[in-house]
Length: 231
Image (tube, rainbow, N blue to C red; front, side, top):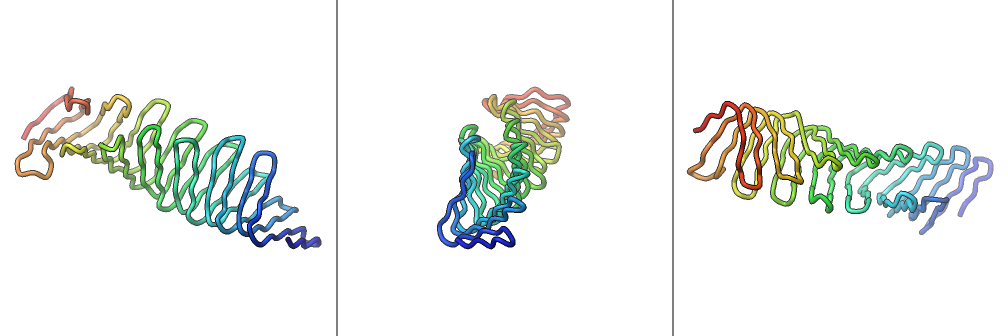
């Protein structure tokens, strides 16, 4: 450990640990600015919040203790119970319990069986809500593949939705194209607008259905619709 008293800086080199009441940080190298109360950690960083029960891993971490902000950079991973989030960079507000992830973002929710891939994501931990920005791909229950933009996941209401053009494919060669959708993933029930449905997608013989709006039950592929057209 090196202590520069005039600048109130503390450096450590080699496997080290920083501990306060709720948070424990492990890393290969530390720099602590006592005046600003900011910790810079580098090399196999692990943040363990024992009070909120989450873990963050990254190549580099900046912890602004006065503002309760954590910034990660490089191979970032956050684990919270059954939900794991990966990304290049994180910005985590511990006071609000809000995580912003950027770059090669992936959410693996083993509880709801949902995987989300995007480049920008916000996770509101207290509200159990996830927002994405830009192109988003999701796999729900290992069966339904959603490709969309700017999606919203509400884990409390069991809703997954987007107001942008989207496609939904399943493992039975069904393809849905929609201008917007709302999917109740616990009931496998889809509500959509301006829908094109293709059965046996990619095969020589397939049927196409067009709806202004419809309710589709994915469990049995039944639907209630308005203004239906069949090809």
